[in-house]
Amino acid sequence: MIADLFLRTVPPLLQAAYDNGDVKLYGSVLRHANGQIAGFLQETSGLSRIVSLAGSGPLAPLKLVGQGIQIVQNEQIKSGISVVQQGIATLNQLQIANLALGAAGIGVSVVGFAVMNAKIDGVRDEVRGLGVKLDRLLDEFARDRTERIDDMIDALRGLAHRIDSRWAMSTDKAESGWHRDADEADTLGNFFSGRARRLLDARPDAVAEAAPLLDASAMASGLRVGALALSGESAAAISVARDDAARLERLTGAIGAADLARAWLATPEWQRAPGSEDTGRALARSSAEARTLAAGLRAREAVAATRAAPLLALETKGLHPREWLGVARAEEEAPVLLMAV
Image (cartoon, rainbow, N blue to C red; front, side):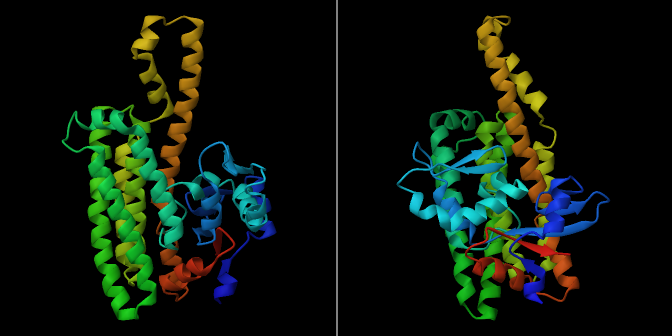
């Protein structure tokens, strides 16, 4: 039954329906045009190979292009490309590369510490990259500095490691530990979302600066939902996911590309020479960046809204969520699994 439900590739008919627009992806859920669910996507430990290649700098072997990935050919990484070619093809076919490599992820974020660790590193680097700018913005309303955020990101990493390590425990001990982990994830999620909320309340256009805080909150939410699901508390996991999605919607749902672009018009750079050719080009760049930032907000919201969606389907099939997540954790090649409906 497990093999019949959890597929490593998207069936050709479903892929064709996706390609022609009859099936669309919303967050982690594939839906037919009539709203009927076609399947659920869940990231796997196989994503770690792709994440490990998606480094930064001029020799990065992977390059995100729109919703897909291109492999940058060079001698240093050529030997590792064959291992991930098929996985990259899957991400590109479904146009989910940004989701898969992003912090929010696809589905429940408890499928292997290597994947979470790499994503947490990415969020930490974003916070450190903002440096003094984020410090200044935070100091407008709080005494927290980026060092405090860095400490909490380390706590998030420790939590992800503990959740993963409990797979080796007996069922009773693991479930008890996962219950405690869910409480810690709640605390961390509240910290990150609270800082993001204060920042966006003071500066609604500061989406780029708030992004790593939103990502950290999304990871904490994913860990909390996953820990509850693993401990057999599916109803609680669904409720938590719903509440977290609603909180995120209240925080970022009203922020669109037009709002972000308009914020540029209020900057001193635009006001100094509003009709010049240089500022016109800068406005065009700002508008493109605004669309990208807004798309990121919508994607994060969609993932949050669908994170716990498979749990009800699992229950109707008589499967414990650990079976679903255990298969995903054990998968080392395919970056995502499809639970067919």
